[in-house]
Length: 265
Image (cartoon, rainbow, N blue to C red; front, side, top):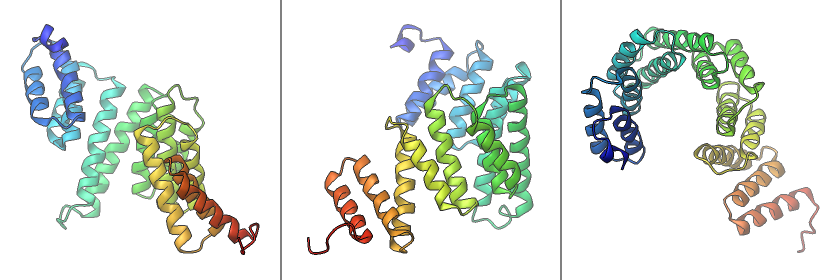
């Protein structure tokens, strides 16, 4: 409606394009992005959010071009350096998982990792409370086995006071994944998945936390690792999903393993 009332406003067009992209309406989103980029007003703003659109679309080179153009007007923008870091990180992941052996060469993707780290470092120099920049930097550092540096950055964020519980929830999810897959500590991973889930509202990250907890609990139950705790966690997963019958069956099974329930029942 706002775009219909102000059809020449590039700010509204680029904002609408991102919303359409979220909803999977890619053709209409692309039209609005192109129209916004053809405008000569609000260029720095349009460049930064059009870059976000192209990064999410997977057009990293296009996103980087727009971000560097925006950076010429705002060289000390923490947001722009963060977005550039995300682009390098995405390129690193694409290269690392490519089927092309030449692209997969370690020195190639490690160079991109270092570029991403430099951009995230610049971000936190400009804005020391930029939580997600620390987290993304830690994730890249973990990918290149800089575990001491990664842990330090995770701890900085875990010790911050968060104004937005969505971010805090995401921090617990990402740190849990780091503990599970990089440090091979499922116990610590479970602790942080549970902390994130206790934050209540069923957000997208909340659902990712629940799935992560379910997978690790299922694997441990199948391998008979702390079976009472693992089956109890599966009961909690069912309970949080609203499957009370399945939850009760898991809790009963866990109780039987403790010997607290008479096996004749």
